[in-house]
Length: 348
View 1 (cartoon, rainbow, N blue to C red):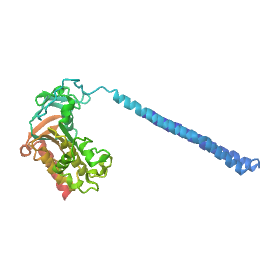
View 2: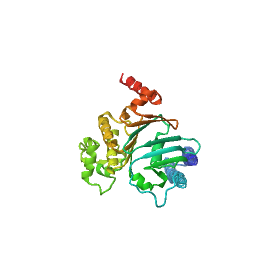
View 3: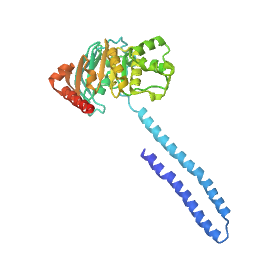
View 4: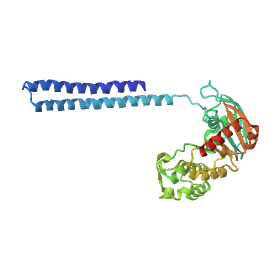
């Protein structure tokens, strides 16, 4: 990047300087010759046009060279990323295929992204089949890291992660992820229509199935109002839709594949008031009878969870129901009181 900036800051300005200097010199020299009656005004104008014609391709060449340098820098970056060693070593064959019931257990898990600064420190917990567990904590406490480890986007340095009692490293990674549904705060929508974004271009999913799921997650409330309903084209990333509408589409997309484990990572953050009640209702229905993990900053949205785990500075500090943690008057109590006061201040 520094090299590209250096080239951009020298090559093109140098060509521009030469062009301006040449024009200034011709105007000065030509003006003197006109005063001596040795040159006409038309001849001077012709020389200026010739100079412009001479430097124009040079300026275009310098711009092309700048683009070429930027492309080279980008290719070097891409190459360096592709040469990075895999953070996860996958089993070539013989991995466990399932079916996945939904029991998740962390046993003394230690994890660091750079192998120096521990993000998770000796974390242990067990989530039973059909249990809804909320994970809360301050920014950077390790909440999202836990989600990344459950999906095995990284391998841990110490401890064990068990899925249905089987070490996560013994699972076939594709079979494992097919049975997990992940809903992120920043929903990505593809260029295509509503139906294609829900089915992910899977022709085996019928329109009846899509409509049933859409109604289940309350997404029909706004889809039915669209000009072409399910055939309405969506801009890339869903720019024409509200945050809440994109979340509802993401809910429908996730349930289409009937995951055994549902993960909602900040799924109810930054939603508009119009669709907030629909999202809350859909969340309750989606998590019922399914192993569910919810990460949320808005503590009021997770009161219904079977269990709430508080992560603080990489360690599991508290665990219990909402009422139990409030009565303990620990970290969760402080977080809840802080948000309650902020809401009161905002309403007043």
